[in-house]
Amino acid sequence: MSETKHVFPNERMKRVKMSGGIREILSKAEQMEREGRSIIHMEIGRPDFDSPQCAKDRVVWALNNGQVHYTDMGGTQELREEISKKYCRENNMKVDPVKNVVVTAGGAMEALSATMLTLCNPGDEVIVPVPYFSAYADVLAICGLNIVPVEPREGSLEPSAKNIERAITQKTAAILINTPNNPSGTVFSKKCLEEIAEVAQRRDIWVVSDECYEKFLYDGVHISIASLPGMENRTVTVASASKTWSMTGWRVGWIIAPEQMRPFVNKCHQNLVTCANAFAQAGVAEAFRSADADVKEMVSEYRRRRDMVLNYIKNTDGLSLDIPQGAFYAFPLVDKIKDGTLTGFEFCEKLLEEAGVSAVPGDVFGMPGHIRLAYCREYEYIEEGMKRVKKFVESL
Ligand code: PMP
Image (cartoon, rainbow, N blue to C red; front, side, top):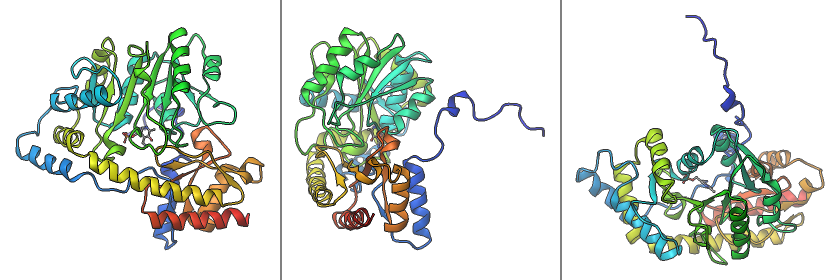
């Protein structure tokens, strides 16, 4: 058979980086492990806890009780009701299970892709404050959109509404924000969100708010930008069960969309994936009802780890950081990268090869100079990682 005349990659995939991301760093670290090296994984943001027992039991029940078919495209009524109750009760939002909620089959990732495909036209620009979750760049590229990274406020890791406004052009469709933030752990203040909301309204653009880590708060409060005055009809909130209940493999997420947009995003979702897994939805609905204690326990353990990681960083010459108030990442500034001795990639490569710690350079998140350390493994394991990081940085 002759070879196809179509040349890969196509225009869409040409814009997606095929190497150098978190997954590639993880693969390299795993390969070194297979070769017998002792590696501490601080690269990947995958919670280490089991999913709540009540959710797992409910899945078994659902499987044995006929929940094995397609559900409503937008999610089971049961789960949509739990989601809307939670947002009304905790996030100060008005959310109707039928008019506003779509349950997704690929966690927050599908929620983001379906949202972007629904809101934006090909070639539109999406403003994303740095540092940002690395997959945003790929999702936007795959949707045919252009990412416009904007620098944070001077001396802070919080977005700057002024910088966001300066980046707006005729082609700007949306601003994509994420609080608590991956990779920095920053929790955006009410003032910061109010300023972004003011710009979005005055300049008439959408806000997409990724709130995957909202339960992981050590200081401060979580505010949904959709709850601020005038934002209800121009904000899409995306989140998932992945981090909250340590359910990354369940792949259930959701979109809270304004009423006028919901039918369109639901149609988009329907044609991408049909609907979310029926029995997984039953388990997630149970987690909403009965797993608060599990979340509390996890958050208290993450806080213990955060405090330990912070302590090591504070006591390491050559590292400095803003205190992460949420999520499970520390994002220290590294003097030897900042002063140009090493690039972020060179630093992380040496850290992996010489000290056996796998971390991600800030470059991957649009913010060179920093590295991201994920503390979502056991306390003692992370402490061993931090001892190695300290020794390595101080030996440079
Ligand atoms: N948004 C952010 C900020 C994330 O960190 C992640 C996962 N690392 C996701 C979205 C995607 O999560 P999921 O698809 O598992 O819900």
